[in-house]
Image (tube, rainbow, N blue to C red):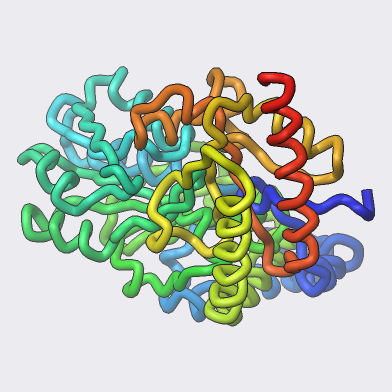
Length: 390
């Protein structure tokens, strides 16, 4: 395993050593329940408060605007279903509400909105342009006088395209300032700024495992005036929005990793973009019939999504895995949905292109020597597939 090269960082990345060090005392020594009224509980509560304060400082938000969750799936669901249900408590009916999202969102967002549609909420799905970008005009055109929520990702998890959220929010505001805009920013923290006002939306979803934090912790950041009601029920933790004993160790790790990621995102963006572009150029030079999916410029630094036309990408991924390289063909959470990449299928309209796609995502520590080895093995793998007509 030590000789393997991991190139699936969009799926998961390791917890950094410094984050693990920050978490360890709260796993082994300071293990009290932060809701308990004794010394151990107060130590845990202080650590929880310090973590919340750190996240607030990094994102430039109020501490009460942070809701810690078990990850992006829960945060997205809370944002989408929790907002609609919050408006219902204020007197709106399902049929009097309309939600807008895109066809290339993470499956969790699409499933949450599908659940609302089954209850009678009106739903509009907007489609990306040929570069895999959701344009502000396409969102604006979908708005109606019943629209209460727009949910558009910050970075697409398959093709890595970056959405113009500030412009989308501006177009939405010009139609109706009461419409809430939510973004799933799970793929953004390593390489893009997350200052709340700079991103320009009303709710942001984050996932610790995507930026060097532990798995099983995330957060929903929301403006105080956004209507929200809990989707889980129990105690009054997280201002009543997320019941259940807080996992202090994971939250400490989340806060530490978010600080690390945002402190270095510009530097990582520059070096990783250069290595990504070098890799794309080498692949295009050495392999025939390849196409990059999504915009080459408006994409997150570490993403290479590429179709090897006429080849079986599942077989190619298996070949690379056997040779010591971990890549994927689509979003890991969507592996049971069928053949090929739904995102590539939607963006390109090309079934064969969707079925011949690899998603290669670099990490902050990925080296050029590793990518040189990868390209060499990839070229050999494609030649093997061509020789055997796979």
